[in-house]
Image 1: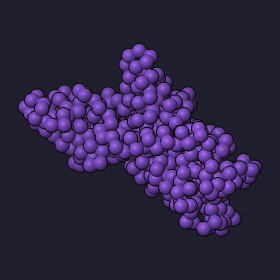
Image 2: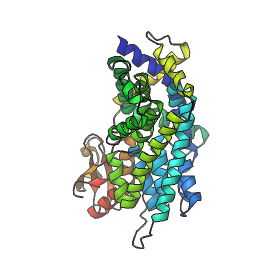
Image 3: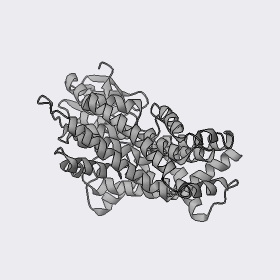
Image 4: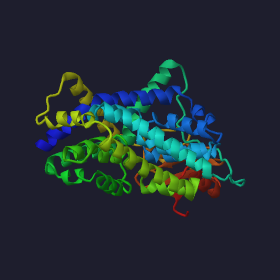
Length: 421
């Protein structure tokens, strides 16, 4: 029962702030045009790098969603430094994770997290710009990885915002959020108190250990929050917990491979080293330079709860969030593009029966955003009648007579690889 109590308590703490974050994410999607994200990032230099970081910080994209988006920005004219800055800043935080960080870890972490994302993104982007040598042969293919905002009047856009925030966003991070909560509850209950006290005597050693665990692991910026809280309850220093918050969402093997392929070896090396060294440097500042009281208030509150006493408003928010999570897991094919997708029964589509079918296995799709972008861009190719991307299997089925080479080039421009790559 203690495990269940811990899980309920964390969910109730996060739910109101998560719902607020999802709402803001939907409003950004519905009312900020995609062209805004591109036109400010074209020229190399500090202004574009800074703009890319500032644009990326509030965007609620995890590392799998930000990769094709950053690749698209690069292909459509953004400088290499701006693309790298966007890649570093975006997965570390977002409006949803900032709100959730405040709810569980307190205001100090909620402020430091976006500031750290801004600083490391700017440094990484500037280093890439300094080492960048333009490639005359590089082509700017027109790929689109930022969801098109809903058209129509204010009411239609508002409905689109609610759908994106409370349906699509929940589908994209719901699994990782629940994994984070479950892992955090398990740590809270089953790991002995003071288990990490030894590492508290050697903060830098604990940060290096966290990096070794976090880099190969995938965890979204929101899902990492309860895990960090639970580790701190067991004796891990706040600085080491911050390393998990920063390195876990931003650096994983999939990200490194795609960055290397899309932006080059030097950019990939700068990307990874900036995240790791930046996380350790800021973590050290937290442990050695900042007041301990800034980071112990949320711990004392969390540790005091056994049987959670939940107010009416957090309880309502928790039930609503649970309903959204259940809906996310039950829904199938959440991104419906009626002019791109296959009919459930090909026999009901006479036009499709007159065309050939091409099936390609795409590697690297990790969320609904990824499948939607693959469907959208392949659907624009000449000869494509319909396209459907299946997330669990990674298979993309295309009906029509497209050029297979053009299909594979489009997939690669989005930052993914194919079975024949």
